[in-house]
Image 1 (cartoon, rainbow, N blue to C red):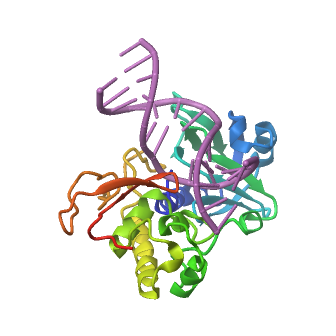
Image 2 (spheres, protein in one colour):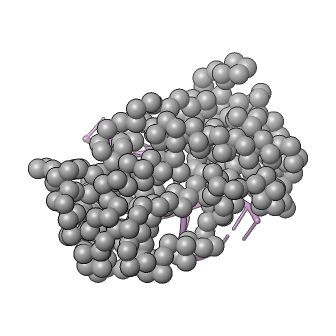
Amino acid sequence: MPELPEVETVRRRLAPHLAGRTLAEVEIFDHRLTDPEPPSAVAARLSGARIDALGRRGKYLLIELEDGAALTVHLRMTGNLLWLPSPPEVAPPFLRARALLDDRSYLGYTDVRRFGTWRVAEDGAEALLAGKLGPEPLGDWTVAELVGALAGRKAPVKAALLDQRVVAGVGNIYADEALFAARVHPAAPAGRLSRTRVARVHDAVRAALQAGIDAQGASIRDFRTPDGGYGSAQERFAVYGRAGEPCERCGTTLRRTVIAQRGTVYCPHCQRF
DNA sequence: CGCCCTGTTGGGGA
DNA sequence: ATCCCCAACAGGGC
């Protein structure tokens, strides 16, 4: 899935096509997508709804409806949204839901692994997401907030960055990239880092996410933009997916380990506790 | 061909 | 707070 930069890219590319449009006809084929609500009920709720704007909170895409409700979409690992000016003749592989808009354009949702979710928040997205998500990393997020969130934690700093309540939107790729840039070992106990090192992590997280957005979310091998194309500038990573290759800073062989049940790549020389 | 491992995530139970 | 498993599938290595 798309981490924050990929979701932001989807939001930006979809917004011009969807804002102000009406979801004329919505069909949902996968009951897991809307669980525990029945897909037919959600499809009926959305059919005829007018879209006010597209928002984003962490890794959630928010389809804000004119009546104050929001459809919160989480792509998880393999979800993707595809917009086309008219419906395709052949359904895209792994299609789980689709919508026809009032201008006859088409919105398809595909998801190989079926981890993604569509939930309607009748009172708006903030109510549904409150408590689950911490600050937006590219908003007014401060070093002091991160220091506070890490204080007392014995878990690895990488595990803390993946905790969406600490900061919203960081996933496995950008966590590794940010820690490499900050020269902090991913297994370092979060609460023991000096303020200086926490500040480096804070700045590196923001820089890594912004770089991902600037590269149009082209972080993932097979990521497609909502228009079906590839990101224009395939982003290069310093450590993600590069175990066994030489560190670009010091030449030491990058090492792979597992932290927080996620594959983790780091430079054992550059990144210290 | 089959088996095993890995994986862009997050919720729930221990 | 933390750790582990799990959801469901594809793709690669052996």
